[in-house]
Every structure is written in structure tokens, then in C-alpha cells.
Image (cartoon, rainbow, N blue to C red; front, side):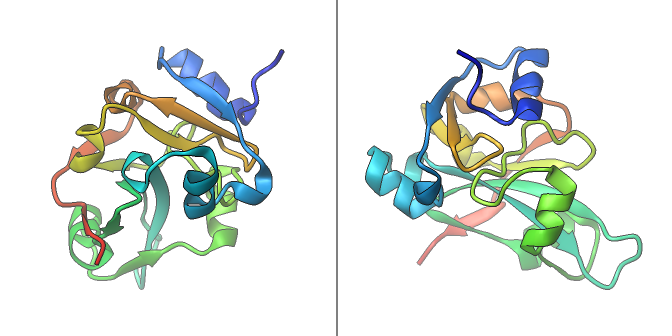
Length: 164
């Protein structure tokens, strides 16, 4: 049986020697809350990947940020500081799809090598996390330390704050 993952994600995992397991996912349950509830994961185990774009800066600067489902990305302070810009916001779905070649609900920092990847330090404290597979029909689980095998990855303290 072939991989369920988006081909570029699968290739990057193999190329960088990342150890992982893949899971099949009903496309209608790919979004974090629905996925966790249906498949028995907690939000604390869910590592979400979000594309952030600078505003009013040419050329636009981008970053992929990986945060736990229980936290909220600190776009206004921490991400702006990392990108060296005054303003940034979540990239819209169209931009996210165009830059990652992945489906919304399955976006993952794996396989995107021309954009910096910032991983919140709280992600690294989890024994295992679940992440997108590049599409809405698959997910991967891995030990967070495996992310350090990928290029452009930087672990950042306080990238995210606890969600209220």
C-alpha cells in the first residue's frame, strides 16, 4: 500500500530520516477540533501549522509556525520580532495553498523548505504530536524532536500563549 500522505510530505520525511506513523483521516474530520474529538487525541497532542505573512513590507516575508492546539500563536509580538517586521497576520487560505501546495486542514511544515519554520517550545515537551499530512485525508504522529531533522526549523520560546 502506498502512503496516504501528500507525496511531497512523504518524500521530505524519508529524505530527512524522520521517524513517523501515518493515520488515515476522514476529510470531513480534518480540522483540529473535529479530528481530536473523533480520533481520540487531545488538543495538547495536536501540533497545528499556520502560515504567517508580513504586512506592508515588500517583498512579503512568510513563516510557518507550529503550535499546540491548546495555545494561540503570538503573531503581533513574537512572530513580528522573528520576521523583523512591524505587522504580520495569518496568511489567507489561497496564499497558504499557493505557497505550501497543501490543502487547508492538512498543512504541515514538512516538505516546505523555502520558508522558515518556527516551532513553539511547548510542542517539544509533548511525548508525541499529531500533524497534518499535506491533505485532508491523512495525519502523521511523531516525537517532536523528529522535527529538528528538517531544514529551516527553529524552536522558539513563547511563540504561542495559552489560549483563554
